[in-house]
Amino acid sequence: MKPEIEAKFLDVDFDTVRAKLRELGAECVQPMRLMRRKNFEHAEGRSEKPRGWIRVRDEGDKVTLAYKQLDNRGIDGTKEVSVEVSDFNATVSLLNAAGLKKTSYQETHRESWVLNGVQIELDEWPWVHPFVEIEAPDADALYAVAEQLGFDKSRALHGSVEVMYIREYKVTEEEVDGWPEIVFSPTPPWLAAKRRK
Image (cartoon, rainbow, N blue to C red; front, side):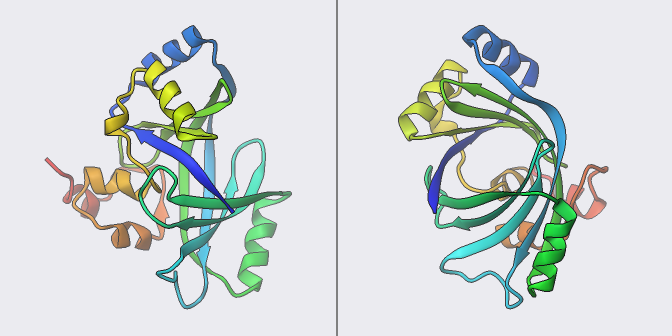
């Protein structure tokens, strides 16, 4: 398993980011598309050490099966091993048959760019503001591209998407992990009441 060297940058305007990416000579490798994922864990739940889960994700142009492990919220605190599979629903059926427990279904919109071997993702998740995620082979490459795009590395967030919901709502990581669905719909009233001022 290898660490994911990635960082999220918030409070972005996608049109401004796109214009900068084009100016820098980046290539849009996947236009904005719907992505869907189902997350699974062992029937007894996520273990605390390591804290891992299995994800099946339809990425629009391919379907992947991944084991993800969150060791910490540092730049390299998430580890992943991923393989491409042929069918989203068949893979979900396989995991169900193996006795794994589905924990959540999630929808997102994502647009993918590449600049100097670094992946730049324009991400929209339900009920939170859009953000940019940058993934690179190492921290130096990541922060070099972040700087080119005008992002302040001291404001980077790391780890899984729970950090976005914690930033915008008065919720805990455990609460977000417990939501059975994160889908494009109006913000549920129970969550809207927890929005941070």
